[in-house]
Length: 78
Image (cartoon, rainbow, N blue to C red; front, side, top):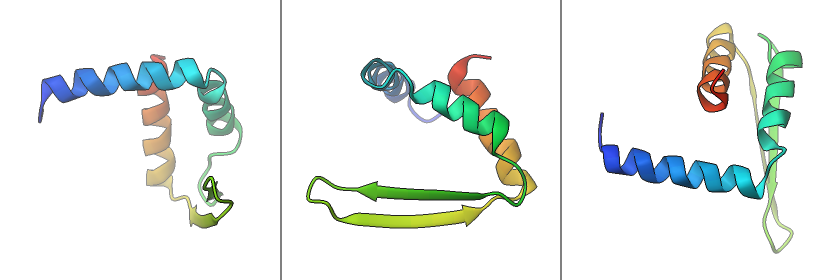
């Protein structure tokens, strides 16, 4: 464990993020349960306040799927 104080700070920031975006975890849970599978393409576009976008994607491997499902369980407390 690197720095327990940093982990506590991160937990507080995570809770605040969920307070600001209450539907975010439900969205992640839904896509993890219905769309995250080996061979699926995860596609992400971020648009800044000026309207400029950056786009990227990744084809998921079995290891990626296992990792994403583990992260989801850890974050949701399932």
